[in-house]
Amino acid sequence: MAQMTPEMLEEMKATGIISFATASKDGTPNVVPVGMIFMGDDGNIWLVDNYLNKTLANLKENPKAAFYIWTRDYTESYQIKGSATIENSGDDYMKAVAIAHSKKETYPAKNLIKLKVEEIYYVTPGDHAGKKL
Image (cartoon, rainbow, N blue to C red; front, side):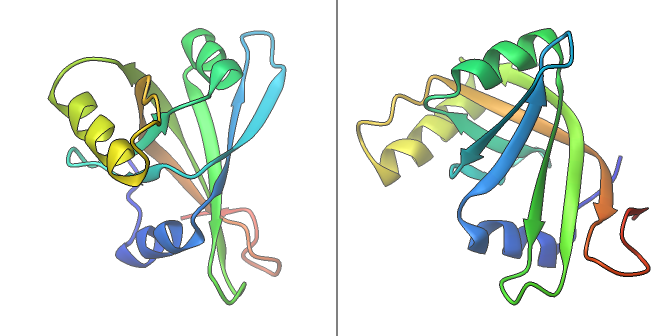
């Protein structure tokens, strides 16, 4: 399992909104902006599903997903790939609901998506672009 560095996590947090990519079972891609993304207590990346209809349907068919982050000064960027699980009950889900509601009480927080990071790639232009970390 690949592991994001503290610097990557800080940049993910600072970015605010990431592009989250999934694909259906037949390979039809879907990319959506996600703002509720953070490192969970269990070492997985957590996303709160407020309005992710196609994304959720895709993850049920095909759990593979990816997103990328870039540094605020645009000097480095990384692609993160992994497998997702979906939760809508339990302690972790309730923590995610609390986080969502702390930002805006009316967020539905329908599901918690946990992404287990499996691969990280350096995607900044240059000699290292596309290299697996």
